[in-house]
Length: 113
Image (cartoon, rainbow, N blue to C red):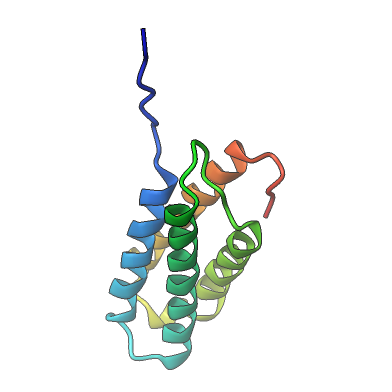
C-alpha cells in the first residue's frame, strides 16, 4: 500500500508567490531606493525558485545565505522604506516572508536568522 503525503505548506509555491508580490509592490511606488530593495528581493526569490526546479528532491534544497539575505532585505524594507509603500500591502508581504522563513527554519534546524 502506498500513501501519498500531502504537505500542509509548499515553500516553493510560497516563494513563487512572494516573487510575484514583490513585482506588485514595485508597481505601487516611485521611490527608487524602495524599488531597488524590492528588485533585490525578487531576484533572491527567483534564484531560490530556480534552485528548487533544478534540484527536485523530496526535501527542498535551500540556499541558506540567500534566505538570510531575504530576511535582511525584509527588515530594510520595514525600517527604511515603510513610508514609500502601502502599509497594508507591505505588512502582508512582510508576514508572508516571515512565514516562509519560519517554515524553512522548522524543516532545517541549521538555519537561523
